[in-house]
Image (tube, rainbow, N blue to C red):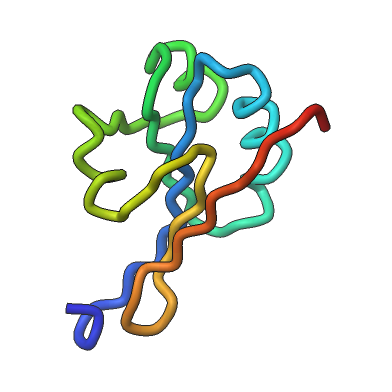
Length: 92
């Protein structure tokens, strides 16, 4: 229904058990407006202390629907489609 509704949020999918992913999210999330953090793994309470409100992708339902294979990933609306960017995280 993107013809009628615009999704203004940027979704950050990441695994909070991976310190490299957490560091990457900390470094880059401020570059985006209206971010929602979605965990694919890790402790929600610990992640919430770092980022505020956290959502958990229970059983991979959301990431499966968006065809996300690797995290961290950034997802936002691009016209009538979802844009999914899977990010390679190395020692930054």
